[in-house]
Image (cartoon, rainbow, N blue to C red):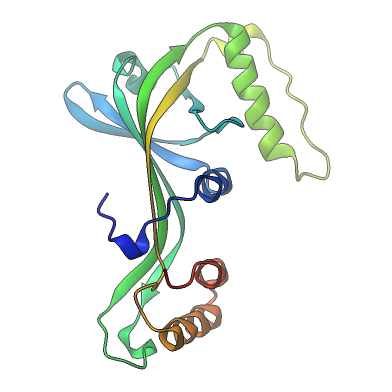
Length: 195
């Protein structure tokens, strides 16, 4: 990913927090010589050294992914930025947050590994429910998926949030974003000012 210096984020704790908050990512690999993407929720264990997910067995992506270097992309809030929102001259642009993770993929097929992934995902996404669902499935259901463990080799993080503009321009952009309902992007801009 192209990242100008003023949009680069290198604070590991911030990146890990971002991935966990925006964990529905895109897994990109090669299938039959072509790029192929699946949209999946990912788990990032405490040490941040690997990503875990699973694919349905009918999905062809898993059949050639073992040992491949893959790319997983995560996206946060984003929106159009009009040059009319700046006090100084500008051009139309888009503000956004994105993380790219590169790593080697290993397949997980043992029932215990698959159960751990499904239980962990369920724990994360049922945590806020008033009546959380308790996983109840048999081994036959687990045989319908393939687990993935991606050993993280490189993380690239870009927050393009007008850090290259004046404080007054950023304030104006935040006000317009709030007005248009892009509250999360405005909050991210407030957190990540000029570098």
